[in-house]
Image 1: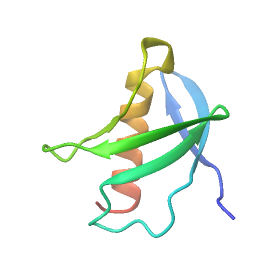
Image 2: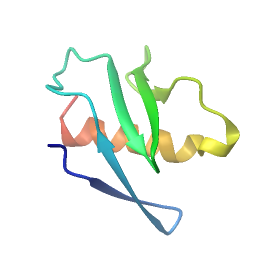
Image 3: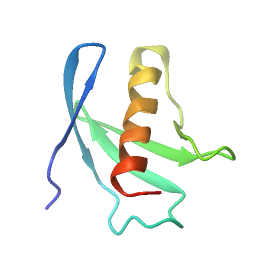
Image 4: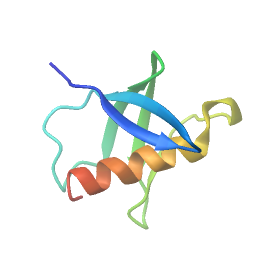
Length: 76
């Protein structure tokens, strides 16, 4: 069972769930669920996490912040 994680972005609280199991330093793709939509975050060459197939309405800044949050949480 995945527990929801929280993040505050632009003075609003968001809750997301990490769908990927067993995240390690070798993990290059992470699946998350945010607002009942699934997103795939991929690690780029700089070590930052970006969403694949994101649109402007998907809040790319929020998805980058979630990627940073996961990176810090799992020490990636």
